[in-house]
Structures are given as structure tokens and as C-alpha cells.
Amino acid sequence: MSSAAYSVAVFQSSSFHVNPGKPHGRRCRPNLTLIRSSSAAAGSDSAAPPPTKHRRPADQNIRQEAHLLHTSSASPDRRFSAKYVPFNAAPSCTEFYSLDEIVYRSQSGGLLDVVHDLDALRRFDGAYWRALFDSRVGRTTWPYGSGVWSKKEWVLPEIDPDDIVSAFEGNSNLFWAERFGKQFLGMSDLWVKHCGISHTGSFKDLGMTVLVSQVNRLRRLGKPVVGVGCASTGDTSAALSAYCASAGIPSIVFLPANKISIAQLVQPIANGAFVLSIDTDFDGCMQLIREVTAELPIYLANSLNSLRLEGQKTAAIEILQQFDWEVPDWVIVPGGNLGNIYAFYKGFHMCKELGLVDRIPRLVCAQAANANPLYLYYKSGWGKFKPVKANMTFASAIQIGDPVSIDRAVYALKNSNGIVEEATEEELMDATAQADSTGMFICPHTGVALTALIKLRNSGIIGPNDRTVVVSTAHGLKFTQSKIDYHSGNIADMACRFANPPVQVKADFGSVMDVLKKYLSKSS
Ligand SMILES: Cc1ncc(COP(=O)(O)O)c(C=O)c1O
Ligand SMILES: N[C@@H](CCOP(=O)(O)O)C(=O)O
Image 1 (cartoon, rainbow, N blue to C red):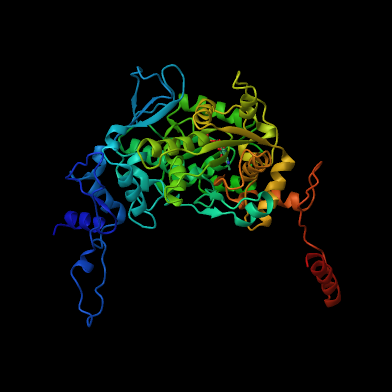
Image 2: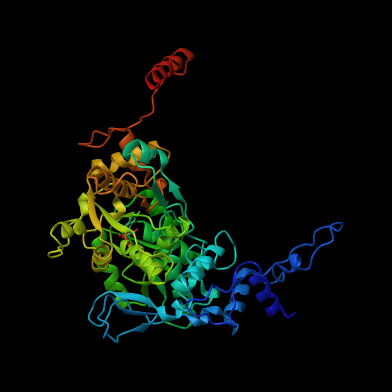
């Protein structure tokens, strides 16, 4: 067997394989063949030692193996395609761009959207896609071991796996918040999707693997991209710098000086990004990066770039998958620049369009009251959108007053019978502390989303038995200073009702016994 043929065979052995020779009608059962590994198929002599398994020739890695499959004429990916179109364009609109073009805005200056050839995807029914995506979970096959790339046909179908830059992101825990739900809300079906338990500690990894992979491809195609840049409140820059470092691509990040956590600041520094600390806020940085990327061959990595949302939407698909393709009633997402709320809508909507589920959940976008332009817009009955000056908030990653994806967010909320809520500083910090007291360790943005849940539950809009998912967007360890401030009771005008400060005690047995007895008598 030639090495190419061998590698295709072993690739097939490790996952369900779409039979590429046979097109399927919409009503066909999925034609999935689980090809057994060559060693298993060959049988074995129980007296002999088990044969050493070689998944591929020793001089070939998983990336090369996937590349060989992709470039073979049998590649199933060849059937699918995607392109940029103006966001929410009229059906008569003929404007579109190849994903290999460097373009962020439509001719009229509006947002773009990545659209997939749904007719090609519809040739396979919902059961087919469910089975295919399920078959890839928990594997190391390149690139499907990633929660994003396990949905490659729906993300960037045409990209060569060889160009993909992935840390096997996604597949994050959907945590049953049993105690928080029961104790604080009387709910039994409350879940937290821990998107922040990820490579760089936030959901941004999901979008960044897609964007940096496409940049890798553009550079290979000889396109003028000398580096990739973003404005950031901390998480986007962390993800961008890590994925770029992994691919050997220069990254440039614009950060608002003194407005992001130390843990977030150190991430791009450690990953070798060119870090500019700029004396403005996020909105100021965003304006600057847009001007700079229009002048220099620096590719824009913020979610204005619709490629990012193709990765982020896979978290929605993953939630459905983790519920065995049953649709939750509510999904609550903290919102800042507002790409993610649309990404969730898009993932859910695509699953409905392609027959994997029959409805979508109601979406809630939660904002900090100190940075709440979407909330104000919603409360005005979607009258006229007015950007705000975002004030300091413990939820520093959503301290954004002029979100680039406002139109996308409104579209997502209107089409999902959605709601917008807000959280004061005290509410979000209390909710964070309450969640932590039940065993989580969440970021303040997740506290914003939990506050929205508490309010909607208290007003009866969310029922006690509604299956509800709160999206946790970053790891709590990035925001330890806010927890230290809260638990020390060191925050002006905040009662810090759930603070749990350490007890200073002398180093002698009697003193330790005294405080322990007092503690035990209170807690019994
Ligand atoms: C931790 C965290 N949560 C939530 C958000 C909000 O996401 P989006 O900007 O897509 O609304 C961001 C970034 O903006 C973030 O970094
Ligand atoms: N919270 C974000 C803000 C920028 O959002 P983006 O999704 O448009 O990149 C960050 O971490 O920088």
C-alpha cells in the first residue's frame, strides 16, 4: 500500500467516514461507515503479544495525514463552500466575496456575514450531521479533535487541514449547576457552559482558531498579510497572540491602558505579541485598529471580521450536542462588542435549518449597567441606537460603549424572541460570589449573565423547570483581583454581602481552637 493510501485508510479507521462516492438524497439515512482499524480487522492470535499499533507511517504526523485526505479527489469537503455576503441583505442582493479576499465591510459600509451553501449541506439530513459531529467528539484526529473543527463542514469547509491552527479548543464542559440552581433559584435544570475553560481562558479561542487558520492560508496564497491585529479588553488579545504564536505569525494588540486585568495583560506579552498600551478606552482602541488595518497590511482580528463568528457559533451547536440534540429553553450570554450573541443565534439557527433540531432557544443578552448601550436600545423599544461612554466595571472585558456588532445582536434577539437585561456592579459581584460559593469560580461577566437569570427568574419570565444555559465566557482565574477586592470588603459603596475573608489567627493551639469552635457552632 502506498503511504498516501495507507494514511487515508488509517484516517478512516479513527472516525466515521462519509462514503464520498455516494451522494445522499435528503431523506436517505446517513451513510456512515465505521471502518475498523487494520489491526483489529486482521484478527489476532491470543497467544501472541498484541501488535504494536502504528496509526500512520512513523515519518508522518496527523496534520500531513489529514492534508493527504483533503487533497485526494475523494475528499468529502469538496462538496461544501462558504462566502462573505452583506449582513442581512435583501434576497435580491448579488454582492459577495470569496473568503480568500481581505474584506471586512460591504460596499455600503455595513457588516458582512459568512454564508454557507445550505443546499449542498441539505443533501445530508439532520440525522447524518448529528451522527457525524457526535462521532468526532473525544478523538485526536486532525483537525476534528477540536470542538470547532469537528464541525469543519459548517465552519470553513474549503480550508486545507494543513493550514489549520488549532489547540483542540471547544468541547468545553456543560456544567450542571445543581446547587446554585436549587439554593438560589429553585431550579433543577440549570447549566453553565464553561467556554472559559479553554486554551487561553475564554471563548475567544473558538473564533480565533478560525481567523488565524484563514490568515495562515492567505499568507500561503501570497496575500499581503504581515501581521494580525486587534483592539481588546483582554481576551481577544490573549487568544490572538497565542494562536499567532503557534503559527509563527506576528500579532499586534491595542489595549486600553490600565483597564484590563494583569492576568490578561501578561498573556499577549508572554506570547510575543507587539503590545500597545494606549491611553484610551476599548472603543478608542477599536477606532484606531480599524484605521490602522485600513492603511497597513495588518489583518483585523476583532469580531467585526465575520470569520470569528463562524468559530464562536460552534458553542451553540455543542450545547445542543451535549443535550443529546434536545433544545434548551433559554441561553443567556453576556454581551460587550456583541459578536457572540449573534454567533450563538447563528449556530442554533443553522441546526434548525439543517434539520438537527426543530426549534431554537430564547436568547438573553446580559450587559453591565455601566456599559449598557444594547440594554438602553432594547428598553427604548429598538427606537434609535445611541452609543454610550462605557464606565468602569468589574466586568472589564465588556466595558464597551459602541459595539461593532450592534446590528447582528438586534437581529439575533428579534429572531429568537430574545430579552436584554443589565446588572449593577453590586448585583454582578454578588452573583459571582454566590456562584463561587457553590463550587464554581466564575468571571464577573458570567456574574452579569447570572444576574440576568436571577432577575428573569424572580419576575417569573424564566420558570423553575425551564432548561436554562448560562454561558460562562472567561476563566475566573483571569479576574482574581476583583474577587480579592470583594472578599476583603474593599469596594466603595458595596456591601459585599457574600464576602468570605480569611481569619487572621495567632500561631497557637488555643487561638486556633477558639476560632474553629466559633465557626463550627455557626455552621451547625
Ligand atoms: C469574558 C468576556 N465575556 C463576554 C464578552 C462579550 O462578548 P461579545 O463582545 O462578543 O459581546 C467578552 C468580550 O467582549 C469577554 O471577553
Ligand atoms: N471582550 C473583547 C472585546 C473585543 O471583542 P471582539 O470579539 O470584537 O474581539 C476582548 O476580549 O477584547
